[in-house]
Image (cartoon, rainbow, N blue to C red; front, top):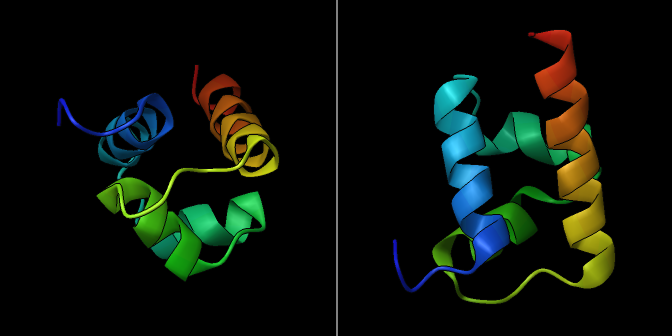
Length: 66
């Protein structure tokens, strides 16, 4: 995972910890499943706006499970 960017690493870790799949993350973050796949695989980097949507989604799910 060393070659993946930070948001991709966070997303992979988040999905594992919360037992979520790409479809659930895409729905919750308002991004397409294809974009989530591309970001996680390192095929493309998330834009600033996409990264913000993903971060917001992950934060909202972290606080509800604490």
